[in-house]
Length: 222
Image 1 (cartoon, rainbow, N blue to C red):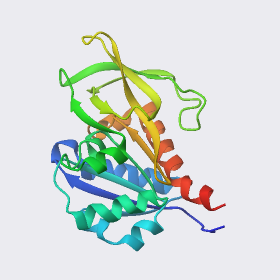
Image 2 (image 1 turned 60 degrees about the vertical axis):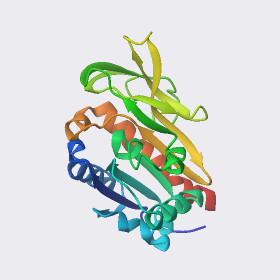
Image 3 (image 1 turned 90 degrees about the vertical axis):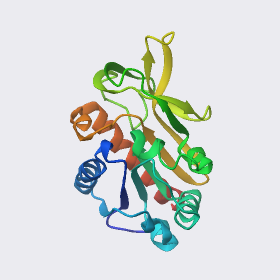
Image 4 (image 1 turned 45 degrees about the horizontal axis):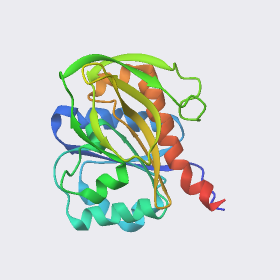
């Protein structure tokens, strides 16, 4: 079994500035460091070109809305997750990246479609309250942000939902987990801008999801 004093996380930020990627990445870097991670932060997709570095990481956190990615950048990322590196992220920084790359979307488990009304008040309901990611977190909380309407993989294991009151009260996943090959995948649609992470329930669920994704490699090797 691999022994390591701390898990390694790679955070890569960039893309559309409206999502404050640098600020969000900094919050995640600081929070993960406080949870014992060795954190590397990058502002270039060329960080994905190094297969050995990606496979040595326990966790990859993309914070890159829209933009484009080359095969030389994308393929090592996909392969690293397939072979056991965890990946986790939020909002458009993970589920509105690289819109032409369907295999990336398949890995994530969803893709943003719309946020009706822009910034709105809405409720989040945790529907799986016994998982390590959600246990003990307030099962219902409110937030003012973009309420993401998404295309989602029906195979996702959904942890939390929101309901669109103006769209027949449809239940839309907010947070889920899945596998991509041997890699754990966690996603949460919260986190539009840095201030959204002031919501304690949102930040705690996201950080726990990141830890869960990162632990997959070590647990598989044990």
